[in-house]
Image 1 (cartoon, rainbow over the protein chains, first blue to last red):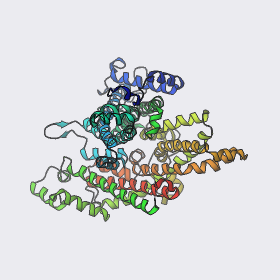
Image 2: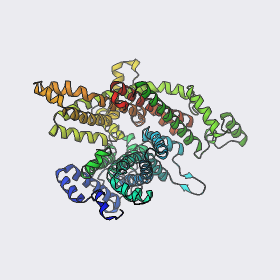
Image 3: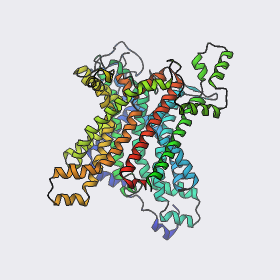
Image 4: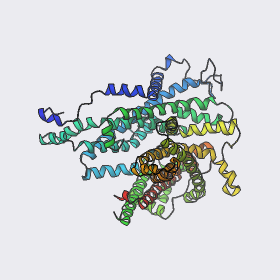
Length: 311
Length: 315
């Protein structure tokens, strides 16, 4: 923020009291507390799997299709692999996919949306938003299926480097969610660009790049972070769906989608644990992230969210 | 804005989006590494045969010319030939689409049957237990991956209780009831997420309407609460809700692949899945273009209907 003495009166008030507001909202919202606990448990499981299981998620054993017991908490699969160990390894994949794709979507979408919003009504805005509109016109999962179907599931040889399939997957999902981020960022920037502090900085001769990327964007964090939380949930479902169809993570590497794809064969023969546990983990994780998105929306400045159309 | 002008504008943007999509699909399929001719012929072939095949398929011509030919053919209903199943893509789509349409319609019926009473009751009981339950159910519905829901439904209703078939499709010609029964579990699987979305929308628009003055007037006149809710509030909250339902229908039509794979239903989604597995590129390309066009056209129709009913959206 440009420190210009009296003009700072017009700058938006600093976001003090976030922690206090969050604590107060949390006290009234036990669901949000539960959601955060679930996500915390899944993160701990993914970060330190060795603390919770000694079984390998990949190495087969002779204990095939055993129901849940004290030795195998979630039973074993058709190759005798421990379902819990595979579920934990799957958590690593899901969280990594969620985090990396959303960072990618933000890295592409935020600058695009910011440039379009700051240059509202110009050709640049038109050009960016027309491309985004085309991408937004279809369900992302259909595009993802099309792109991965064309790319294939083997590592991609580009001559200089060989791109592993998981990198392709992350890239495709991240790029497909970028237009949504761009749209949210653009509408947030549209609100900010007419604020007094922007006009003041312009009058003082601050460069557009400095105004946009240092000050305007800082005030757009709320709507973008609410949307990012929901995107993590959507990206996890997208990866699981692609893996379920055989286009995502490739066996024997575990992922929740891969596990459910394997479970499909055993659903009629009574091995219910193969279906129930991995699915429940996806559901709990995604549900918790959605609840956290709602919660963030409640805590972060509601005025600003309503104005940018995401109230 | 004049209705005709608005429709022309929307039609123009529809054309732009479909053209953009066609370019995107074309580029994805052509520019990516991997030679379609080699994929078709296998690697056990001679350069002469490959060159001949390339010329025959027009792959030796400039990219823009290839795109022009592909687009011209697509516009006349010729989406090319499947490499694996010797049939035209259009014929395959024509054979499979009715099944997908049947599934999507039934899913929409299921979604509305759940969402309408739930949304209205939640709004009528705002802040009470029923509202909280429906809020949570809505959240659960949106977060439920459809492939898991499908497997759970099979586990419960087909395997454990034995009430409904595990999968497969009974054609409408073999009995309307049996046909719909064969699609009931798939329709629930497909419709649940959209039921949640529609319910949330209906609740929000009901609350909006219930806060208006004329509702207070209706109550002041001593109308029964049931009449106020269902006659005055619900009918006015219906328009935005039907719009959301219309968009949901587009999503369902284009997004049946997972449900059709789980329940082994011979529709467009399963055809796409099989064509991906067999690397039948012309078929994949044709189905994706068909799905996207369908989705965009359904959205367009919903927009048009909405603008006819409610002139305010024309801006």
